[in-house]
Image (cartoon, rainbow, N blue to C red; front, side, top):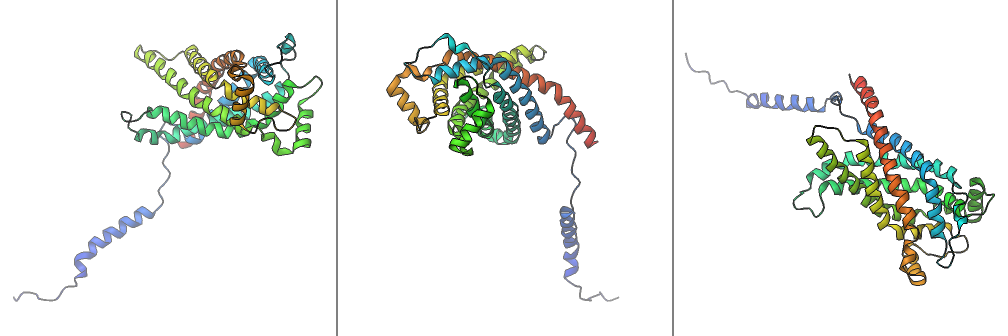
Length: 333
């Protein structure tokens, strides 16, 4: 029999390959079912909510316990260098506690919700940094970036409360938070409630950039020492880490705190045109010691506050995380 010379369609040779490509493409376009998070892994939303809840609880506790020290510190800083300190400074140390407590929950909630969320979100970026070539350790960069984002967010929430609180702390007797709030809005408008936002955020930013990396560093070192012995980190160690980090950060940033206080309590005209102007004028008119007025009660307040705050925060997280984890595991089952 003679060979079959029937011409064949060239497309026959490539059709099987094209079919495979088209099938693969169709499979890629088909929406895949959402994969459940692995057991033991919390979603970013849960991390944010846990941070908010834990931060709110810790913020209320620390403000109620340590508010008197904050009042004394504010009164010392608000006075000029020529004003003598008298026993009267100890009277009514809980004035302004209502706006302070009202601010603590939302401000601390927003801060720690944002902080924990950014720590999780930015972790891959920090992992790409070369620790040996970086001037600052990648983990430190991560904690500083998370603290900065949390600071700008929470300071916006805190500024109006800080304004009312500090006006109450230096005001004469008989005034309530509502009266002070009404006076500010009537005289200067609603926007005046955020008059100290820039100085507040600027004061908190350097503080947070120092405190949180230090806290995370101290906590990690102590945790590793415990893990080497097969033990869990003790809550008192967390409190010591928070206290030490807060004391160091508060001492370094006291000049910014002095300027922030002066800007917020000034009522006639504009004494200081901003943080830089405040620093320059206080230094020129009252000397360098004036920039560290109130440093002792500030360090005492924040170091004690750091111990109570971070202890309360971590204790609350430890209690609520299993509840969130159980809820997510059941939802993904």
